Image (cartoon, rainbow over all chains, first blue to last red; front, side, top):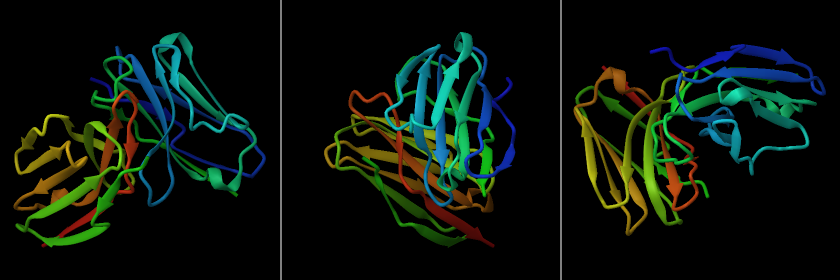
Length: 116
Length: 110
């Protein structure tokens, strides 16, 4: 079974530029999550989708971050414009069942973003 | 609200045991444990649902005390492969999302 795929793996941009991350979850997984992990911290949930609907985006900085999940499968996360404090690893995860945190989450390898 | 993990870091020799604690001030529905090795994605270890059940997986087990909103991860006879950062993720009743702690860095040395 293929795991969660993410691209790119690394990205370096200057502040005020824009960047986009892509995630392909495990086939058949209904729920998709985007997390931000700052060095030395645990993952912080940014947005949670169930199929192509948003379950929770309360911690997404909506003035600069946006996310969508096309046709309930792939997802993109965009930052525009980027700030220095956005430097982090962006993790995508998916789980089989619906919008319940009791489900095992499978994480992708992440995208390491450096904003200079 | 972010759960509190303790200790922040621990160093073990192969074969020694360790306990990692996770506590929350909120009423919890479940606690999840993940291990993350340097530069890699977090990997699922186990889920504990309210009810005080204890789960085990080979030499790694965990318990959940719902009255105290605390969970503990037990690693026995540690192996070099156990090295990494352990995160607990807590789900508050009705939230349908996980909030992760800051992690406990475990280093196992020969």
